[in-house]
Image 1 (cartoon, rainbow, N blue to C red):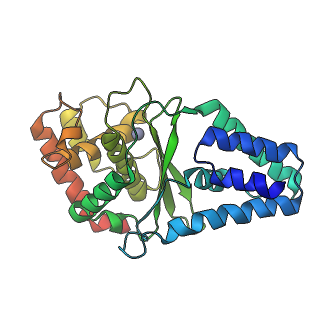
Image 2: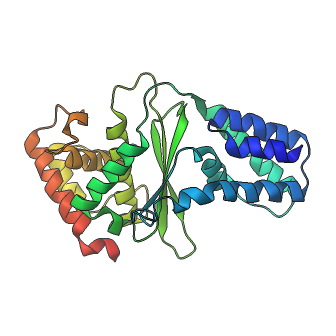
Image 3: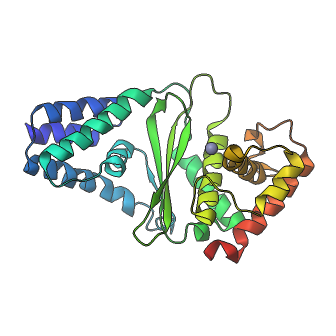
Length: 273
Ligand SMILES: [Zn+2]
């Protein structure tokens, strides 16, 4: 019985369906052994994805979870506890998060091929794989839409103090008129920002003089959002991705300045200090 439900949890590609299977699992009062089995099967399901980029050299820089995005979601949110009761509580929290924040897919979502194309491009032009410092960026492509956002950059502080990021990429919300490619580039901007500052609320100090040229009155709390947009604009400007640029009101001279700045910043050794 448990084997069948665990299989359904691990294999579902839709977060809402996974939450339903998790609910069934919890209602059967799983023992510590059953919960361990779920943990083992999640890791087994994710293993092929961690190997998938090994032959083209991308695996150390990033790992894309598409078919297994739900298992990866569960893996990253589940704080493992000692007792069965505590683990059941953790899983219940995850079910609530899914039920309160996710819906069936609404708009478009970036494809795995487009992600690979963009990652390859930002690596060539902006040394992006070096920015990741050899820690794989986890990119989760979901089959669902989120109720309030199109994507998220989720930072995680590691034991050695480094900050790693996971990107949660959803189907666009119905009312969104931007392109999935622009949304993805915006999130890569957050990755750069967090890798440099170690803090999702901070931007590199060198950014503000540049940004104030184009945006004289930036409120402190939206500085990271402006940085991520400027990164996206910098990458899209005068490139094969310019068709995805929604910032028609920003002067091309400003976009060019952002591009020079981001290039300098990304190539700068300061990132590694
Ligand atoms: Zn953002």
